[in-house]
Image (cartoon, rainbow, N blue to C red; front, side, top):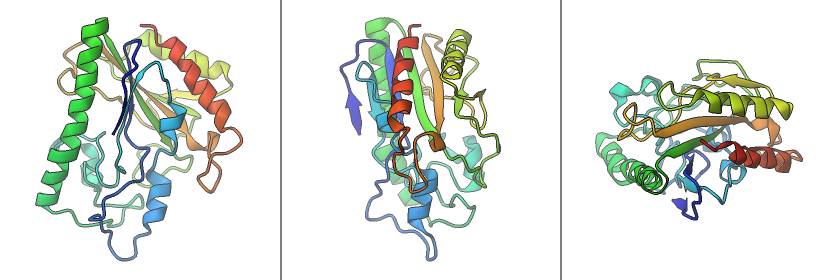
Length: 248
């Protein structure tokens, strides 16, 4: 788990889906192409696209296929759990069976990996509040230009901005929307994905904890082999310059 702590402002970059690391104990069912699941489900290079040295950066070191820290901890609270994509994935991006996850393994993953990650995020927010009086979480993602079967929306802009009515200031939404559009990018709010990460300790309780999600369409920076394309550095520069907008 990578944490950059040379924080000069109250900005925290949360990067949950950039890793492809899985432990040796992770076993998929016969016939599952794990490489294809990595290709479709990984937020490739978001730890590089969102590399603001001025901010705190929390990068989750495991693949989301093993543990997805963006999900609610309990399946009863998580809508994606019904599709086999709760904290521990049991379904592929095609909706077929990925692997078996027993109750003991799920409890282990939650207590030793999921909970520790969320505690680290909570601690970074605590530190920002103490030092600066407010905290701003940037939830950093990318998405496939090809709608996947488990997704509810087929809309595919260049940039998706995810918001929360309680934690996302309207002026920040409009500032980012205008900035990306001035760069020639199409922007949609809360489509194809909505919401943004906030620690449960502060969720809908503390307005000084602000949060916004930025999702980048992978067609903008990847080729068909899931490698960086010739536009990668331009997109990294565009994303990096959003840091100048995080002034509230």
